[in-house]
Every structure is written in structure tokens, then in C-alpha cells.
Image 1 (cartoon, helix red, strand yellow):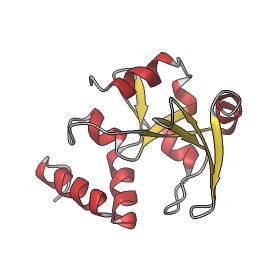
Image 2 (spheres, helix red, strand yellow):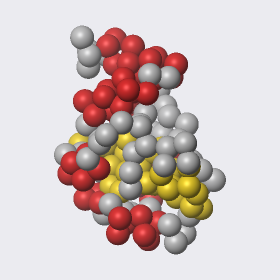
Image 3 (cartoon, rainbow, N blue to C red):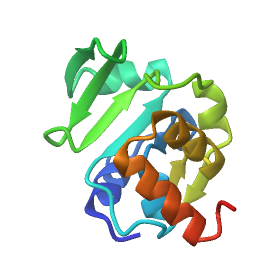
Length: 135
């Protein structure tokens, strides 16, 4: 995992039990896609309260979520996921540790990308199939 974004996140030295990378991040961490342009991080409220003190916070009405971004929006933290119904605590509690960072398990990423089904998500689902993660 050589992505600079992963190094930036690792450099924040956050407690791994309180967050997990979601979206395309787990795919990049496993080498399914070559890189990701930003990181979406789910976190528990206490960690978000801390992050929101140092980042830029905004409400996204289209998704009904409030997010806090660091590094000019390269890493975004939230306590909710605006697409689909996910138990955030479960996603964090069952996260897979890869190179000292917690990542939401692939089956949850697949569920999200299937629901959203954007052009990028469909490409990622194809990459998951080609990599043997989906049949």
C-alpha cells in the first residue's frame, strides 16, 4: 500500500477501533484498483468530535450527512453513510486491518457500490469480479 493518502491517514495516529476506511479505499488497499483519489472514513462520534475541531465541516443535503474534511478534502470523515443502510458500528467493529489501517470489509463495499451503481462503482464491481472477489 503506497498510496500517499493512506500514509496521511496513518500519520494522524487515530485509534483504529474508532474508524474504518470505506468507499474505494478498501479496493485500493487490496490492489483491486490501482489507487483512490480520496478517502472516505467512517468514525465513531467521539473521534468525529475531535476531527471536526481541526477539519473543514460541511453538511451535504443530498445525502443528509455532515462531514469533516482534512488535507483539502482528500480525507473525509463522517459518522453516517448517506447511501444505503449501514450499521456504522458494525462496519468499524468488523473492519479488516491492512498495513495498520482499518478497512471496511469487501462485502460491505460491494453492497454500497451495488446500491449506488455510478459509472465508477460499476467499474469497481467489474474489477472485483476480475480479481475473484465476486462471481
